[in-house]
Image (cartoon, rainbow, N blue to C red; front, side, top):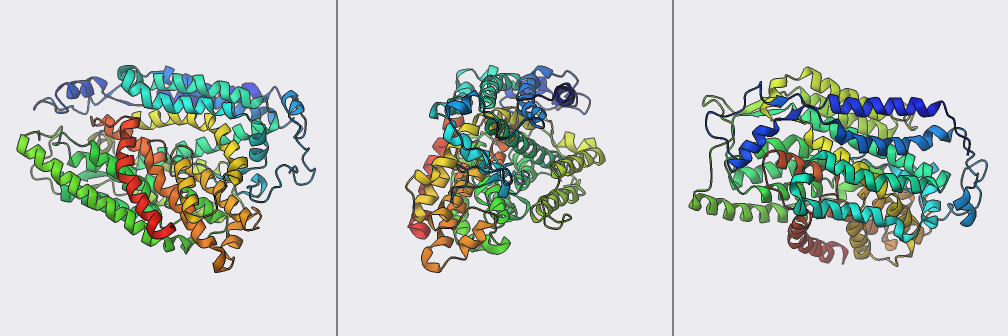
Length: 590
């Protein structure tokens, strides 16, 4: 493999500057104030509320960004070498695992030309549809190199991903003080992601292309979440709503109504802070945040391609924009049950709190004469701009229906987020108790997740057709279970391509339009509906099932809400969501 050496120092310098700058520009919430508040049981004694001057502190811990910088550089370096690398050149590993050479004109080998498997050359470059968890994923997980890599990788190559998931679940319980620091999360993510990335590089072009696509998706994922995080942090709800069961259910209902149109990430970032402020006087708030994740961050985003990344990828592959409105019955059943269960649950908790005298004074006080209203409403323009950028990218607006240039969408989102930050009064963010801590936490952990899950996705891409699933309920549960732990966007594409292949539709271009055009007796529409519902709904099963989940958790914890552990959250989802999904199976996919 020929290496273009001049690109390496340039690459190192570029990303070294980005990583260092991320630490320098990162204002931290006053840790001492949070610790004092925690010592007071979540409340600060009257007269000790933080002022503007002590709300933020200057020290910066750049060590938290060192491992993530290594991860980013490891993903980028193969691309820096890629210009001089002959695509079909075998490496030592490919010699021991022979792979047919790629065709000189198409770039595809015989291994990759299986019907029912997505081809990267035919998949649109759309990383920004990362609303969710995973979100941020584009269609490259099913590219030319995905299937080839999946045939080469052993099953044990998924071990780092499993260990990382276990670390996310266990460390908050085993050593919570150590784990609460982003540097600790970055250390664990780096120790698992860097060896995985280096191992993938040994597979030659297949591994380096997979790493590059993961890097693209990660950048899009972080920029989408980050821009929405910053924009929503500049919207302040003036006055104080009482955190009653009716008000809380109203918040969740509003979020459920708008999530399909502004995205689950946009709705989550917009509403979580005012919801937490409304419930400052309450001691038992974790269940409110959990149901918020269930509804606003996941199940609500089913009605349009803008709602959740899997649906957007389906739109790019030929599903009509309005087709997802046919999923309204499933959307209504799931969200109506969730809202009803939440109202009953919160009512019981609220009454118990009042009877026990557990409700306390709020952390901050609003002037008595302050009327309810919104400040920073200009940020809704920036929110609309983000939605417009994603929509235009997906439709090729401005490029004659063709793909946008690489990273144009990401640059536009970055500019939009920075513009919002600069034109919004700092006082509004201080009132919101805004800091970059939550987005840093998500960026650190998901850097490791995006790298370590490459083997799992690659293996799934080639083995999905061998799982023996054919009926609607099987597609619903197979897609959903895997979407709970893997990125739901490539999981959706994998099973959509599998379903199309079963019916003789090759996964080329906008193949889902051809799939939906099959005769009604084929059941194509019902199968695709099952795949879509499984990917969207079951992203709520774990903290990592969808991008907004972990972000909402981090924001809640920054506001002194004691959230359930990884397994504790799964107890909620197992006890509440799985029975609801059973009802969905019986009613719609049985």
